[in-house]
Length: 64
Image 1 (cartoon, rainbow, N blue to C red):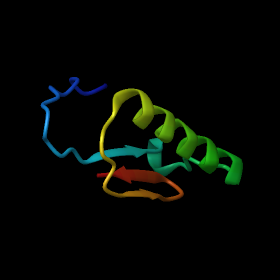
Image 2: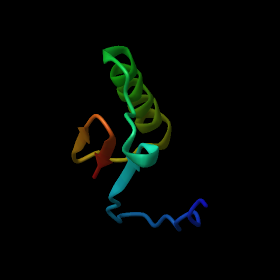
Image 3: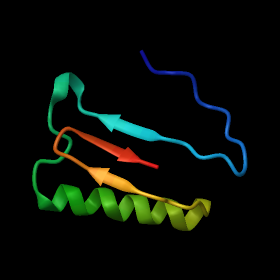
Image 4: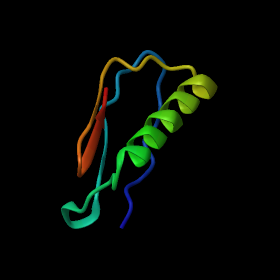
C-alpha cells in the first residue's frame, strides 16, 4: 500500500528515501546507477530545489 502524498512547503527540508522490495537491489549495474543520477538531475532542473546530499546504495537511496 502506498503512502499518502506529502504536502510540500517552501523553505522546508525533506528526507526522501527509496528502497527495493524485500531488500532487493535497486541497481543491477553501473548503467542503472547513472540513469538514476540523470533522472535526479533532470528533476532538479524542472523543479528547482536544493539537493544537499545523496547516497546511492545497492538496495536503497537517500536524498536530503
